[in-house]
Amino acid sequence: MPGTVLLLAAAPAGRGCLVDAASVLPVLAAVAPPVLSGTDTANVVELADPLEPQAVLTRLRAAAIAPGPLTVFVTGQLQLDRRQHLPHLALARTTPPTVRYTGFPWHWIREELRLRAPGSTTLVLDLHADTETWEWLRAHPLDSGRNNAVYGRIAPPPNRRTVAAPAYMKAVATLLRSGHRPPLDQLHQQALARISPEGGMGIDIVLTAQSGTQIPPQGPAPALPPPLPGSAVPVEAVPVGAVSVEVSERAQAVPQPPERPLPSPVPEPTLVLLPAPPQGPAQIPAPGPAPSPAPGAPPIPAHSPAQGSAQTPAQSPAQGSAQSPAQGPAPVDPHAAIAAAVEGGRHGEAEALAAHFEQVALRALGPASEEALHWIEVRADLAMLAGDAVRSCRTWLTVASARLSAGQAPDAPAVEAAVDRAHHQWGQIKDAAPARELGPVLAELRGRVPGRRRGALENVLQQLKQLQTGVTS
Image (tube, rainbow, N blue to C red):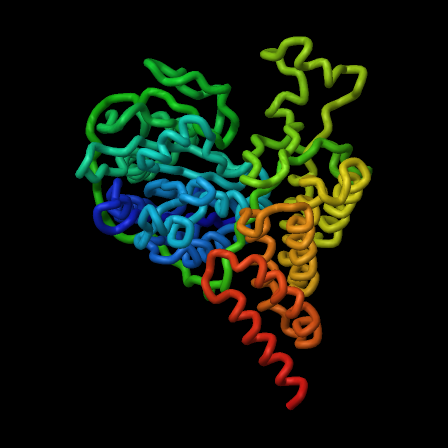
C-alpha cells in the first residue's frame, strides 16, 4: 500500500521569525518519496510558508484519510495564543497578538489524526519556541496524539536578532539522502548525534516515541515526570559535527483537494477505561497519554494505564492496588477497533462500537460527562467518514448544545470545534430539506459561538436565506 508524506515548513515573516524553516524543504524534497515514507511507493505533499491555517488544515485532512502509513515532517516555531495559552504553529502572517487567528493550533494535528489506526502515523518535528512558549513547554508536554509516533526536538529561542537553522531536520534529510531509511528511533538518534547545541535560553526538548530511549536529563533542568509516548521531556542536546546539505530533483507531488470552509479543533477527552463490548476484538492496544483538559472544561478523570490505573513495576503497592490479578485483565481501548473497522469500510460496526461505549459512559457518568460527550463526538466523526453529512451535522450540534448547557465557555476549544464541524457538515448536505431543518439551529449556535473565522454567522444566514428562497420561488 502506498504511503503518504506531508512536508510542512512554516515561520512568521519579518522580525518575529525564529527559524529559517523553509530552508529545509529543498533537502527533504530531494529525498526519494519511498525513503521518506518507508514504503514501496509514496505521495508527497509540500507546504512552504503557508499563509492561512485553513490551507494547512485542508492538506492535513487529506493526508489523514489517505490509506497506508502517514509520515508528517514539521519544521517551524511554536507560539501561545494570549487568550487560552494553547500552542500554535506560527504561519507566515502570525504575530504575537494574532496567534489565535493566524497560527495553526497544535491540537488540530491531534484531532485530525485521532481516528487513524495505531502505528500508522509518524510525526518528525524540528520546532523552535519563543520565550513564553518555551517556559510553558517545560511544564506541559506537547500533546501530538495518543496513537502517533513522535520524533524530533524543540529548541529554545535563539539569541536576539538571530534566525536559527532547522539543524535537526536537515540532519534527518541528509541521512535519508543516502537512500537508506533506518528504523525511525535509530534515525532520530543519528540526527541528534549530528547536531550541536544552538544558542538559546536552555536545553533542547527531545521528542521520542519510545520512553525507554530517552536521554536522561542533565544539568539544572527541572525534574519532570517520566516521558509518555508522543510527549516531550527536556534533555541535553548531543553535540557533534556540522551538517552537510545536498539538493537534487524535487519529490513527487500530488494534486490537492479544494479547501473546506471551516476548521475543526476538538480537544479529545481522556478515555475512561470501560469493558469492551462482546463483539469487539479480544486484544486492543491500551490508550496512550491523555491531553490536559481545556481551560474552562470540567476536569477529566485520569484512568488510562499510562497514567497509573494499572500497577507497573515502578509503582508502589498502594498505587497499584486498584488493579489486581483477581480483578482480571486491564480494560482495553476500543479506539483501535473502531479505526480498523473504518479502514475496512465497516462503518456500521464502527458506529455500533462507539454507540456501545457511549451508552456505558451515559449510565456510569451521566450525559454531561466528558466521556459521554467524547463518544458522541466519535459518532459524529464516524458519520462524516461514512458520508452521512446530515447525521454528522446533527450530532455535532447536539455536542455543542450539551457543552454550552454544561457551562463551558463559548470560546472553549471543544465548543468552538463542535460548532465549526457542524457548520462544515451542514455545508456538505446535498438535500435542501434537512439543510433547511438544521440551518436555524446552526444559526442560533453561531450567534453564541462565532468561532475564529470572521463572518461565520453571516455565512450561515446567507446560505439559509438562499435555501428558503428556493422553496418560495
